[in-house]
Length: 388
Image (cartoon, rainbow, N blue to C red; front, side):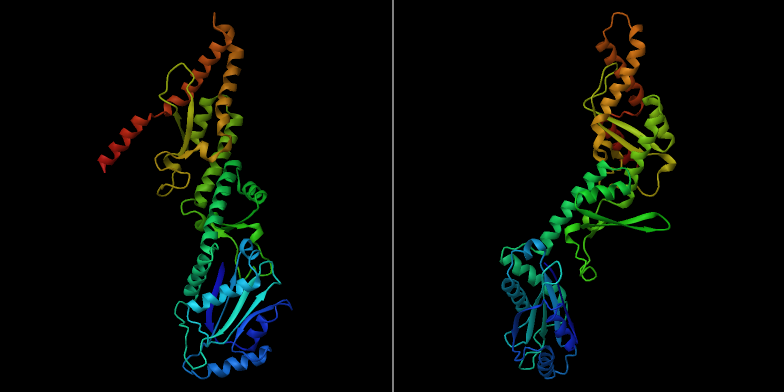
């Protein structure tokens, strides 16, 4: 549950706000207050607070705002009980004045409280140090005792769902506009931040059902990309889109796979193929994955592992593109075109045999120069470590 607690000096306006809420506030609980009017309640509290002139910020104010999933199943009385129990854990006693009001004018039901830190005998029972943090911990403990999900647990679940939907959307899109549209279809709002130097520099993702336009300033919804994943960065997303768009552009103009590979290399990308087993000449080899990486002068900064990016391998095409499984179909389609013009020149060979041979040769011509077996790759990694 979202919550807040802070010490401050208040006026009668604070009590009036708590008890109004556009005429929809519901008085949930009060303690040691004789009057039902806000102005008179303020004077009652101030009279007690003056018994301890050393404490200037004599009031504790705050709220508890349960998410809709929990707020719908909690009665007003249960929400008030949770607030009172949490307040007791941070020092509120039976001798402290307080008033609790439930607000319903906004999308999300929540409860506000005003507590006099000075008890009737003149003692300050609520320490100001880290009061917001301590109150949050108290609310989570009360929720745990009542088998209710805490704000932390709900936040973890929401961020996990956001990351899942974000990575799936990245597989399906080729630019930020498409990404925003795909996420919207999944019930999320994506907000991008920009600066003049690097363009898009940040991202915030919001579950659309969490947006509360009446209290948006008070409760900032959603999570920044860095809060959703510590390893997925905007720079990595930009690279993914660059790879996809480069592949799309070059595949339209290249007449064969070798030409495509060379064109990609000129644009700063290398391709390494991972087969299922060792590569064998003159036969069709099953592809397990394709790794694409920046090369030479196109590399910028210190390369580090990311969510998708692997330092010594690059980006896995199967991980960043939903259409990866069509890659072998495209190779076969290319081979079929070759067969149509060459099968008459292969005496005694069936179309199936010729197709397999040409497909194998096409794959070999395109892929073998960049192929590195797992054993050889491991050997080179060990050798690099020995040189350090």
